[in-house]
Length: 173
Image (cartoon, rainbow, N blue to C red; front, side, top):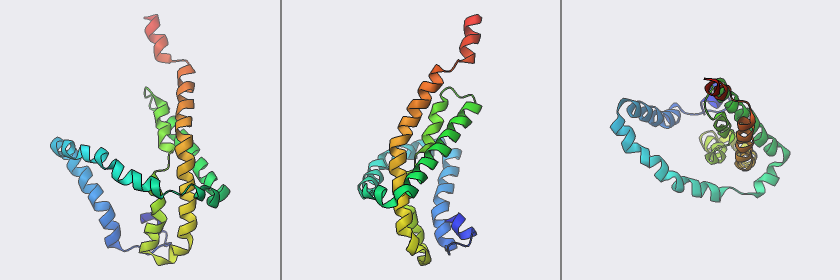
């Protein structure tokens, strides 16, 4: 919403924008200031997964993959490869133990399918493109839901087969 408003592509009221951002900021601040608040809120995140994941999954229409066509599939592949391989490269640069885990960010979140309609609800001028955007994002969700585990698995095998500098140091000592 912030990017669309800043670009002048949508007219998003400040109150709507603040209503989305403030709870995240307050939660972040309180969770970092007080361990008790973090521990209290932590189970809520996993407890809520079935309440939002099931309706999101049930709301995804597999036929949107066909409806979105090549553009939706390319969007999914682009997300998977750009962010997935980018995450892997970042973890590799940081020399983390399992860099393949960084590729897991290549998945498009299921709730992304609701974004075009949510933005169109705030700015009706975008309603004309919301249906097409929803179909394309749904296709990206499906493509990345299938491709992301495959990419992470492939990179895990790739990382396991690569020579490990630390192992050489430990065996020579």
